[in-house]
Amino acid sequence: MKILFGFIVISVIVMSLICFYLMGRDKRKAVKSQWRVSEKTIWLAAILGGALGGWAGMHLFHHKTKHRTFSLGLPLLAVIQAGLIGYGYVQFYLS
Image (cartoon, rainbow, N blue to C red):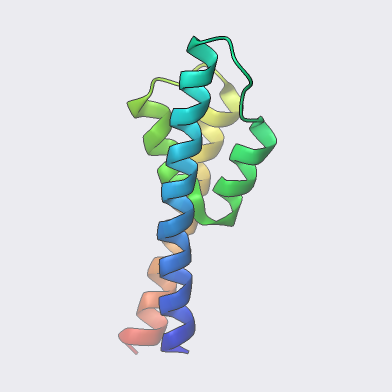
């Protein structure tokens, strides 16, 4: 089970980096009035573990901060994901 937990943690880190990148890319494309990354793609990356990276990207790039679904949803999802990882850590390493 510890191997599975390690895989999950690595997956969350990778998805956070991907979601962070998607936020930055979408912001650059928006400034240049070019093709954009769809919100569905950003949400998919966030739901698959990248909420913390999406939240960080949202604030660093000042992107989608006025969208209520992002400004409330990403932090909530990040807290849930962090809580689940914390719970997994306690279950697999501290018990």
